[in-house]
Each structure stands twice: as C-alpha cells, then as structure tokens.
Image 1 (cartoon, helix red, strand yellow):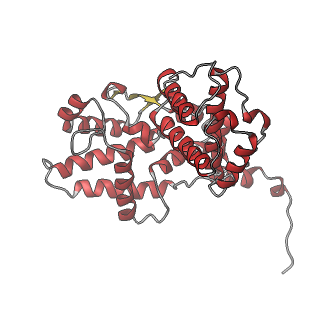
Image 2 (cartoon, one colour):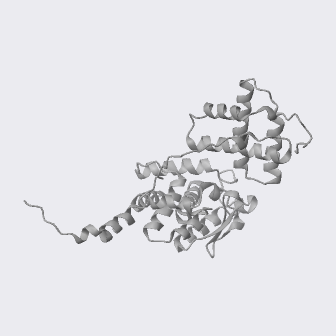
Image 3 (tube, rainbow, N blue to C red):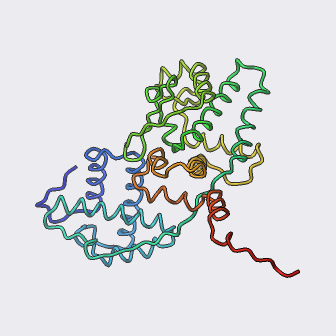
Length: 323
C-alpha cells in the first residue's frame, strides 16, 4: 500500500497499514518482526487516540513522541528501545514516501543505556545431568513401538542438537528435511534476517540419533517437510520445546532456570573455555557483529581462573606471613 506524495492529510492508521505492507511485501521481513511492528505501532495509535490528538500524522510533533516515551518508560530498556525503533522506522518510511512530510525524529535524540545482564550458562555437569535423565528414561522404556518411545527419541534429538549447534530454538523448529544432510552432518540454518549459515554435526552418536529419529518419523516428515514433528504431524512449536525441556530439567534436579536459549549460551561459553577463537563462535551463532558474541567473554570464568592463576604477576612475589 503506497501513500501518495501529494496527499497532505495522512491518517495514522493509513500510515501504519502502508508501513506494514511495505515491510511484509517489499522488504520481506520475518513474521516475528512484522508482529513486533504491529504491536508497537498499534500501541502508539491507541495512545494518540486516548490523548485526543488529531489523527493526521503531520500533526505528530516531537513533543508527542517525547510524551509517549514517558508513558512507556516503565518497560524494560530493551523493550522501550524496540518500541521507539518501530516508530522511527515507520516515520522514516513516511518521510521517504512523502516529500512534504517533516519527520519528528529528526529533532529528537534518544539514547538508551541498557544494563548488561550476563546470560545464564550451565556447567558441563549440569548438561550431563539433563542428558543422562533423557537417556535413562529412554532406556527404561521397553516398548520401542509406542509413540512415547518415538517422542523420547525426538526429545533427545532436539536437546542434543541445541547443545551441539547453539542454534536458536526458532531456528531448530523451522528446520526442513531439505536443510539437513544426516549422512554428512551438514545443517543449513536460516537465522535472523533470513541469513543462512552452515553448522556441522561431527559427533557420530548424534548423527546416529538423528537417523533413528528420521526413520521413526519418516512418513510425517516426508508429508509435511518439517524436520521436527509434533504429535499431529506438523512442525513442533517453540513453546512445546520449552515445556518439554522444563520437565526434563526438573527431573534432572537442575535448579537453574534453563531454557532452550540457555543451551545456546552454554554452547558459546564452553567453546570459549576450550580456547576456540571468538570469531569462529560468532559465525556458528550467526551474530552479525562480534560485539554481540563478546558478552560470553564476561561469563567465561574457567578461562579467567586459568589466566589469573598462571599469568598474574603476583605469583612471582613470595611472602610468608608471620604465625
């Protein structure tokens, strides 16, 4: 939906619809991004209506934006930043489409300082506890022809793959059978912004597990095209994976709050502890900038301990306290 450059009165609802159309069909953005834009812009529209402002977008000044910013400031800094970015993107689009439109964001400078919250990571022993619980439950199930046994194989395959690759749970749930070559262990992952990256599975046990899972779910996979299938034969949802993981974490007695994304953090941190170059980790995680990956250097406590033990100059100073 295009907005005429000759139009003087542009209603906010018309602008939002035009922007969403532009993002969906011209920029081909992901459904998740479209949904976020829709939520943020609808919230702004409700605010404008509630304040009885004129719905003509040309009348939305920098003061309106600033007042709106005050009403959403109770959200987390990351959320506020996203909501303002959504607004700015829409107004930039409108400015491009309409020569006479004055973009209020050109007169606003907003800086967000997000607190750096270190991610939760698991120790290798905690990962072992969870995987041991999965395999123990499978081995105790003698009925290998039941759906329960098949679902246990699938659940192990999902968690093993999260830990083996560090991929996002959304990336895992969106995997197609054409994205995975089980024989070679090569997986094509489509990340944020539809960016493709290649991750390899080098562990023979995980490959064997994936082959077993593929055999059990062959009919549903070939029919639907998705690799990880739910009970109804469709792609498994991210929420299903989260709930499944929570159950196994509780059974394993791990007290940390573990989510699928925790496996991603753990994947990166444990590789750093093995002295893997951070740029290799960046590529495997699909981060566009190295700064995003560098947060894992702050949680890499084992490497820090080794460095301070073996490299700190204090070790060269020998003193004995009097008894």
